[in-house]
Image 1: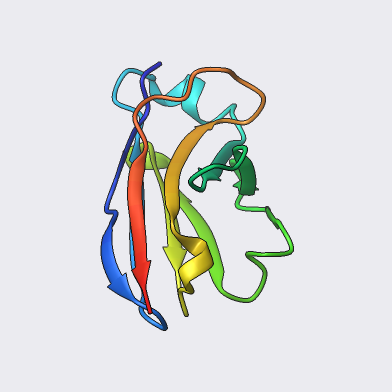
Image 2: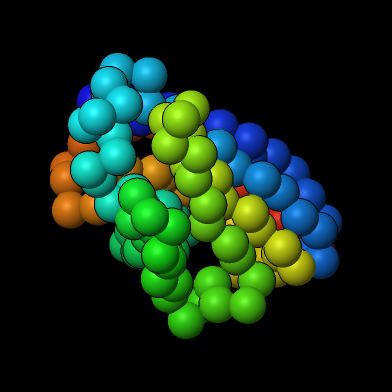
Length: 115
């Protein structure tokens, strides 16, 4: 599927970023069947689920993301977004999007938060 995550960068603690995930190889009728998810992998740690969103917009979040991160999607554009607010140093990681439950990760995007 090769989902394409983008939007990462270097930000100071307390700052914000918007990550985007494109699914150019999925047709619309397929894309809307999937629950899309964001994961992250910090240096030296295992990949963890940040949250997910259904086609209808229902979201779930990891405890670490609740209140600070927001996931949305635009089905017409086959795009999924992750809004990162009040970023902390411990949020430094490579962020990946994927179809929830799949092993197709694509290329992630690096978020680095400085103190």
